Image 1: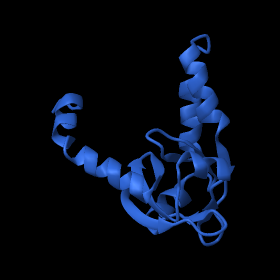
Image 2: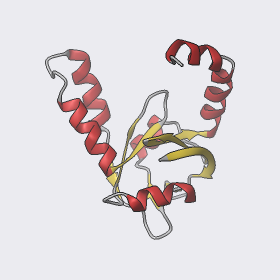
Image 3: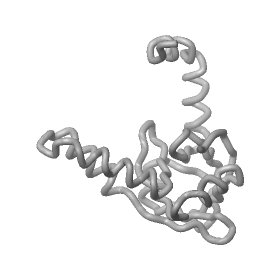
Image 4: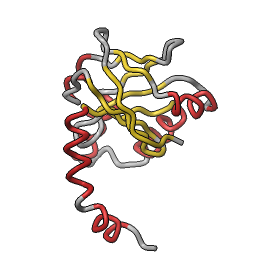
Length: 145
């Protein structure tokens, strides 16, 4: 669905442009609505509405009596915002999410299958360089080919 890494900029109005390669899958979805929330590793997660609803369903099946689940749910869903891209495919990143991701002017927009991630360029470079060294070991640990 979403694949690749794209260097973009955050403009003065806290807007980013959705990469052209991501637009077709979004147009094919039932809705152009997107949901932005706090991600992991200090990035932001962006989900198309259909995938967002699937995540909601998955989380609803978990027991809210578990303290760690409640904490995660509050941060993940409580920090979410629904956005609609404008005609130029720009979306506004709210200040609190921009601060959470420590987003500077240069950002990386990364396709991760069912979601889009927004990273500060420096943080993405650090993450990517650090992970490249362990990529094969991670594959061995996680995959069963």
